[in-house]
Amino acid sequence: MTLNQTWMQRSLAHVWHPCTQMKDHEWLPLVPVKSAEGVWLEDFEGKRYLDAVSSWWTSIFGHRHPHIVMRLKEQLDRLDHVLLGGFTHEPAVVLAEKLCAIAPKGLTRCFYADNGSSAVEVALKISAHYWRNLGQPRKTKYISLTNAYHGETLGALAVGGTRLYRDAYAPLLMQPIQVPSPDCFDRAPGEAWEDHTRRRFRHMEEALERHAGEVAAVIVEPLVQCAGGMRMYHPIYLRLLREACSRHGVHLIADEIAVGFGRTGRMFACDWAGITPDLMCLSKGLTGGTLPLSAVLCGDTIYEAFYDDYASYKAFLHSHSFSGNPLGCAAALATLELFEQSDVHSANRRLAALMWGAMTGLSSHRNVIDIRQQGMILAVELAKNPRKREPYPAEERRGLRVYRHGLERGVLLRPLGNVVYLMPPYTITPEQIVTMCEAAIEGIEVATRD
Ligand SMILES: *Cc1c(COP(=O)(O)O)cnc(C)c1O
Image (cartoon, rainbow, N blue to C red; front, side, top):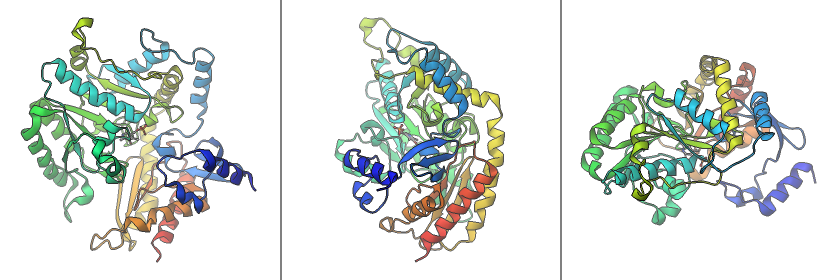
């Protein structure tokens, strides 16, 4: 047995892998990774894979970035962990200061959790608790978008709209008020993105008019519904939503877990609309993909609604053992330093243009229905019959064929159903973009051949 096979077998004997039908691995090899550097993952036999999905969108500056590694080692030599209740530490303080400084204006408080789903739970709880503290205990519902994804814990899953992840747990979940997503994939032929997005906003306005008295918050993924297949919409939606939420007395929660930290071309996706949400969830790229950490930012108005004598029982008594873990915070600070050291966003504009240039030829492909891009996210949607807007049936697993071809070619692509997307680390070079795009284009060719 080869080393790769040994690790695969040992893994399959005891590790229950996430987001996986384990039976697939009877015929689909697991990829054991021994080490990583930059955009590359390396297995136990020296084969390398270009990580075109930044390991689930986390590794924004590539793997083991020397600056982040250095800061992490320094931190490990000083303080590994300490509870954040009653105690504090330098990385948590400085990170909170810096996040509030770069976040949309007015976000002044930072609550730490340790993964994206937990951050969403925190935001949902803070919102409803805020209204309760203000004497409006009826405001306990949430408005969310169809096709949304906010994580896998029960609260986060409840406000998600992806049936694949949600259906099995439907009886366990609170019922959000679901509003059609502004997703511009659905726009009429020839319709401008902005017009479609505005038209879709009417559903949101109606839902707010009807339900504001019982709604705590609206939760959205700004600009890109990532897990929902990299579906995108125009920033005007966020402007209209901000205005409507304020008018109706409902919080706006921006789930920037996937799109924050430069992914869409600005530091935060909300920046494209120039809005400040009431609550903003951050994770994934926050630590440059090195450690799990998340943060929820809010403004003084929310914070002060919890600030009272102990006996008022208004405090937010939520905690995680690893809230604000010093190593995670140090990695996040190192990541922010990388943004300070160079103009990441303009460098990304050039890389994004190269990605577009390499992929745009696919627009005439017989099975490509849409190519879309927002900053460092590029998605190609495949369809059985684009003219009739007829998708490939999910059980044909066309995306999986792209995945397998990618692995053969040494590129980690991990399509979402029929959507092949590129979301590489910002440290990718122009030559590596060529390699990545060639593998994706070939994979699409192989996957659509019948
Ligand atoms: C990944 C993701 C989450 C969940 O984060 P986890 O760390 O995987 O729990 C929530 N919201 C969005 C938009 C995400 O992409």
